[in-house]
Image: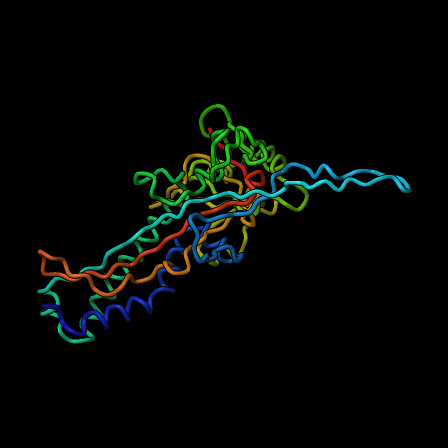
Length: 319
């Protein structure tokens, strides 16, 4: 039989570490860090899907130049639609066996043991969130969050949030393929400049470029030592970077990194991480006892997805 204090102790311990989970996720992923910094990590109360209102990209046909008493166009215009992103769920169990309960019968001993296991669970959740941030939502049988592989795709015409971008071209991101292997230091800046100009619209332009290691290295080599400037606040947060004009370029393909070959030019003001308000890295109920096993398990769970409101202001540079 489980320690009568075990459930209360562990549930309280895990509940106090909710912020640690969020912080661990942020520290491991530059995209989520930037979204959190810009207030783009939000919660929603429910609904069958995460509904994101978007402008269709089609101009209002009522606009006209006119003179004097000329009649004005006032017809109704459908300029808004909704992109529907599915809720995705994850869970991570933290377990303790019967013998461990007996061996750690004191409250402080249980807390110390569970803190170590909780930290491990936090790192696991952070790593999986990092993976999904670069994925296309098809991982684990389509259960993973749909990340940059979906929202800022290297493939034209993808259907995202129920809207086929092959039909509605205003719902497609920009992209540029180099047509070969990873670009050399002599050519990479030209590719980057072409794509940056193509995806920018006045002051709306990418404020973050995420790169794999090879492409980051090519850009590094293209610059003279005196040309390598960085975003200091981002560097102080643990993310080394080099500025491309005024936009930081961050390598996210190192140990435990999942960035695919290429670069993603991101306008983070168009992207959000949306979590369900009742399932945002929370402990589901109390300890769960297996019917045929002498152990209790606490489950940390989350529900949400990445969403985007304007794909055209983001771009992918790939092979």
